[in-house]
Amino acid sequence: MGHLKFEDLPRATEIILKKLSALEEELKKIKEHFQPKEPVELLTREETAEFLKISLTTLWQWSKKGVLPSNGIGNRVFYKRSEILNSILELTHRQRK
Image 1 (cartoon, rainbow, N blue to C red):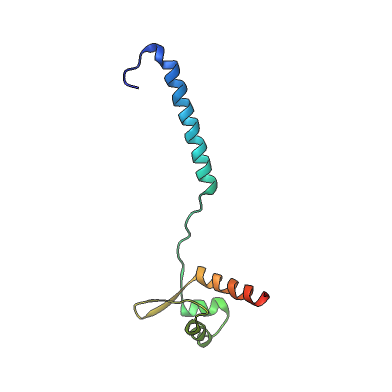
Image 2 (cartoon, one colour; image 1 turned 120 degrees about the vertical axis):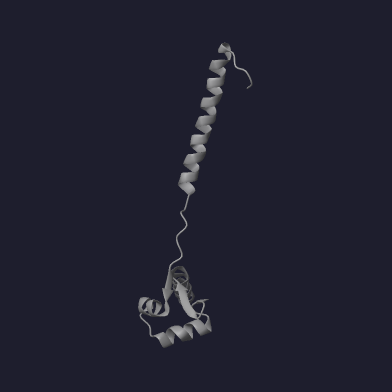
């Protein structure tokens, strides 16, 4: 739409309104399906053991066996809360079978 004449304004306005309406619909769909990304929460060995109500020895054994995935940063070990919860759900699911 290069140069508009006065008589072109109603049609141009109609086109603009249709495009705005389509954009509103797309934004509505995006908002309905948008899931904000949860920040990764790292727990120390002590926090993880307390969270699971187990000893540090049991936590070490579970990590060594692969029951709980651990993440080493430098010479420290951390556990992601989301991975802990997923592991618990997986174990519970296995026990029900």
